[in-house]
Image (cartoon, rainbow, N blue to C red; front, side):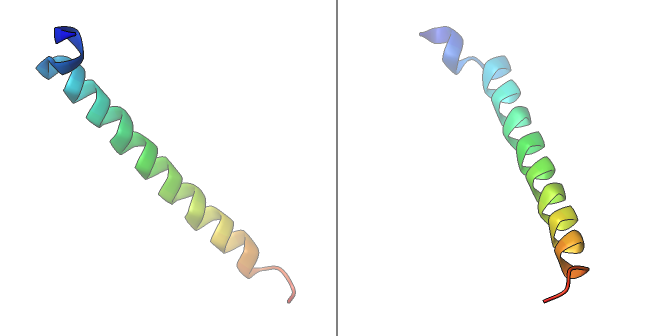
Length: 40
C-alpha cells in the first residue's frame, strides 16, 4: 500500500486532476460560445 502514498504517485495524481479540470473548463467555454450563437 506504500506505492499509493509515495510522493511521486501523489504528484502524478494531482497533475492528472489539474489537467482534467483545465480541459473541462475549456470545454465549458467552447460550449458556451457555441450556444450563444444559437437562436433562442
